[in-house]
Length: 287
Ligand SMILES: Nc1ncnc2c1ncn2[C@@H]1O[C@H](COP(=O)(O)OP(=O)(O)OP(=O)(O)O)[C@@H](O)[C@H]1O
Ligand SMILES: [Mg+2]
View (cartoon, rainbow, N blue to C red):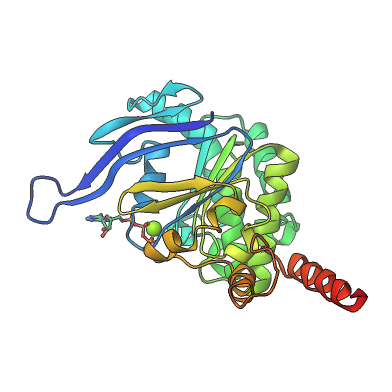
């Protein structure tokens, strides 16, 4: 297991009238090299949970394990875990501060005391991975990039540490369809070709459903369901109870099946649905 939590609990503003129990005993395991999607309605605790993975928040109860070792909260231990696990925040470009794209990406490797040459090498590699390696871009202000480029730059700034796991909190928020597709293609490439463990919070189900190995469903501070897409999206009533909907194609197949048509409901893409409908038509013509 790459990341594991044991009965993780966290309360904001504890001991005050405004206390919010955001995590109420989270137990989860994320396998090394897997692509995991974390689902759950707004306010259920997703961002709070992700921040625990790199020790940005310290649990009030329970523990986090990274590669089998309990996460420690000393400065050196935190540095070590943040080298292994990179977190891309919601709207990460809000945190840009450097004058050039190069300096923005170089910040973390420099902070870790790498040599000038090693920093340059890691920055170039990260920019290449996300497709921002056009030399003209490197000297540009990160604030003058397009929204899609900024999001890729934020991912590059985390990849520059060469982490083994990449955690992303709603990475496609505010991007158009083309930029979203590009971003998901990048995540799939990092996962498949580089073996990077990917954990992503997203509502863009139709885009991730085919690439994700594992889904975790959160509700009011707990994981209430987990498994592969075929399992998760067959439990419509549980999903709707916690305010989640099916990928659109799957929803349509459920409706057609409910209307008496002999379709599988475990279909997630237009291609799969088209094949199912065409097979059915072919069978009818034969009869
Ligand atoms: N800094 C904070 N202070 C007090 N309460 C907070 C704080 N941040 C989050 N909360 C509360 O903790 C709970 C979990 O919030 P969290 O941001 O983890 O949810 P989320 O699942 O990421 O939601 P979203 O999908 O809207 O991003 C919510 O009830 C929220 O109001
Ligand atoms: Mg959130």
